[in-house]
Image 1 (cartoon, one colour):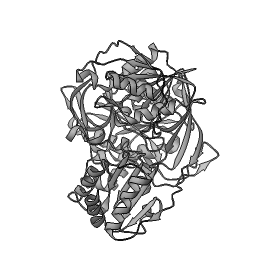
Image 2 (tube, rainbow over the protein chains, first blue to last red):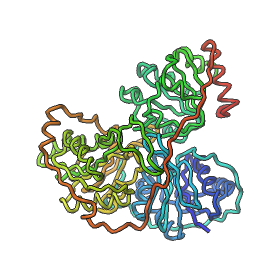
Image 3 (cartoon, chains in turn orange, blue):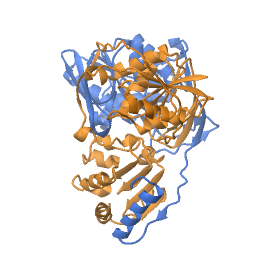
Image 4 (cartoon, each protein chain N blue to C red):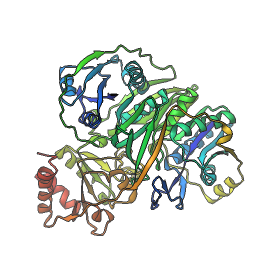
Length: 315
Length: 256
């Protein structure tokens, strides 16, 4: 039986839903599942992980010192150590912003193959499905090696409860901060960071149609009302209306939310590269002939300066 | 300083991609310098202004045609180029080994820049593997860089406007993100000057790289086709908004 370790991402001391989705994906195969937890395991975490099918919870708490806990090289080292200690043959992690800074480090440290941003994984054949070439192509990539690693796109699989009897073990780690990479400071943004694009259920995104930075407040207000993350097209970030971190597309974030609401976005190939795997696309656009209007699920032709205020009012 | 910039020759993001057989794309499309690598080359050129004796070397692995991407990097500020030539499609474990071996053969890097990812295979890992092979520290999605008393101080962007600032000992590997700078798009004289800069070509075979302990192999490619059938939401703005909310509540079940 395969021995898989799932690197669990937490937020506000809770297991992220996207991490639970990763457990559901891994549990489709005949596999023994370890949850690798670096941020402390309390009772609710234990119950939560067991409810979704973890067999063994590996509690390997890093020191509270942010220099240790937030250092991606330390976190990656801990995962690699656990993989060796537990003799794992497969490692799963999320392709979130944090994951993109941690999972490839684990692969590089262990010198083992990795596919990032997987939309699906066939563990029997060790094949990962991922998009390539600006989302124009789906690629099946087969990994071979004593250990293989998959970085899973958040929301690729919805979590489904599958209760297991989970035991908890503690691993003590040697967590020395590497001398050549130290963390000087960090900024978690306003409100400890807005909802992350990659993990949001709903994204409301604005493009050229918003016309200026001030008007983008309509998108933020609407997002606040529906608990959505804010996205943007390349034009909107290049014009400085919103930070680069909001960009969805080829050279921005690749997202798979339940719903993507595109406001005043024409829908270039490069923008679609970032959002075409959304489950539902709602396009609000003045121009009936905009590319996005032919490639969405709901086509709302109209003036976003009338529709967005109505949405805000009615929500 | 010896500044290496690892660049990739990728299909234009606007190109139509056709699949040949089951595992390859038709390469008769426009190829260009990977967009993130434009930021990497630009940052190397910015750094050279503060350390004037620096040598910027663009390194690219690919088919013979990859030379064009090296020329683009040269027009943006690289002084010379290194092509690791191969017709094979290599995974990132092999690519990192090849780039590492080519750089070691060429000189001794103080900084290695790369883009944070390539827009074709979107692997996001080659820079970390190069770092591990050299035992250099690595950061990705860099949005600002400063060299202070022989160390690199780099701010990296995470999601939701969050950032982390790291101090890296030199030599190091830095993955450029879009916020790092505005690419130094070349003028016509830059392009002409780039034609005269030297490019060395090394064959991948001549590097004698032993196979890695694992591999990632493409076993199937298929076009990702959209099958969406748009439904129109009509009416006044108020009615349209009402219908959107109903869809979010009842169909998508994402709000209550």
